[in-house]
Length: 326
Ligand code: NDP
Ligand code: GDR
Image (tube, rainbow, N blue to C red; front, side, top):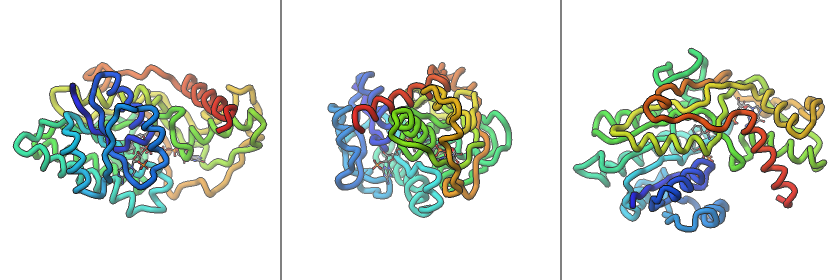
């Protein structure tokens, strides 16, 4: 039975990936941090067979212990301070976790694997935020990186460290450059979930308006359930590599808001949306759209869920949640 260790198992992707690996017959292990982590109950409820290990990406001995105790064939590094807006407020913490945490995990893995560095396959959660300031459209694996936030800079560091450990030590290490992917499990601080929750509550008469930042930003939004399959596929290849994972379609935040309101029959959506500069960022990533041609050819991966279905899925799930008294 193959085994896998997932950091960030309490996050959106961690839950989907763990479910996928359990369904494939893996012995799944997850790194859990913090005392009284409120997300632990959900992990235990959804994934009763998963073994949990206490640890933190900033604490090397906890990582070495988790690797020793889980003895994985595959390691998926999904743990990060992942909210871009927050990364300006806690830039040093973001760097410690999202950048240096990757190095700490790679070094722990190198110690763990000893003479046989490719024995454990490694996945790094790289991000389209690394592209930052638009250089070319669509963005692909060789597009110049020009990050526009402490988060984006931290991800560039983790990305190149992963590539360097692959080239320096022969590790089977892959970076998935994933574009935005969403789901009903998306954290409520991210724009799609913020909108789907608010639209559900407005539809049910529980709320009047939603307060938003920049509606002009464009993102390539896919479904998280599709994207974790790409992570797994990368680690099934003969060697590590970098892959863009995206739908190839881009939509503005305004279009997402409009589509979410339209789904509940509200056409005059602007009546419910108020702008607040508080939600604007010191620097914005204006347009992301990915070219996943390499993933399609090498991994045989393609997204199943499109934009309209994603919007409907998220709004419907939040209507259901609001009705059942969330
Ligand atoms: P989430 O924000 O939902 O989850 C982040 C996870 O990281 C949580 O489980 C969190 O644990 C964990 N974490 C935070 N700090 C630490 C730490 N110091 N040590 C160990 N774990 C920690 O993110 P997603 O699931 O959306 O994303 C997964 C990964 O993919 C992240 O690295 C993200 O940056 C990256 N990514 C995401 C994209 C997306 O669109 N979703 C696109 C591209 C990349 P806790 O419960 O303890 O807070
Ligand atoms: P992003 O996701 O920064 O792309 O990072 P987010 O959903 O936070 O923002 C997307 C765009 O929406 C604009 N926006 C708002 N965003 C939020 N959160 N709240 C608002 O009220 C709001 N109004 C407008 C933002 O300015 C931005 O342009 C996500 C994260 O999952 C990262 O971890 C991941 O690496 C990237 O996606 C790819």
